[in-house]
Amino acid sequence: MDKPNQASLKQQNMAMAILAYLGPLVIVSYVSAKDDPFVKFHIKQGAVLFALNIIVWILGTIMWPLWRILNVVNLAIFVLAILGIINVTKGKEVELPVVGGCSKYFKF
Image 1 (tube, rainbow, N blue to C red):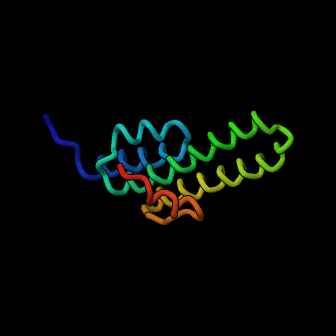
Image 2: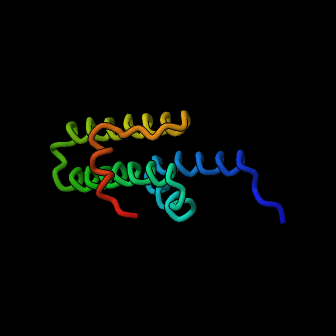
C-alpha cells in the first residue's frame, strides 16, 4: 500500500483547516486531523467562532428584541470565518481579532 505523498497530505490538511471555520464541521476537522499543528491552530479558532454562534443563537431565542444587535454579531462572526479561511488558503497561522486570544484556552 502506497503512502500518501506530501502534497496530497498538505492539501487534505488544508481542507480540514477550512472545514474548521464552517460551524459544526469543526468536529469533522477535530476528529480527522487534530494532530497536525496547522489544522489544530485553525480548529481552536473555528471552535470559538462556533461557540459564539451558539451563544448568539441562544440569546436570540431568549431576547428576541435584541435581534438587530445579534445580527451584527452574526455578521462579524461570518466575516471572521471568511478571514480564517483566507488565512488557511495562504498557509498562515494568523490570530483572528478577539477569537485568537480566546482560542489559546482550548487544550486539545
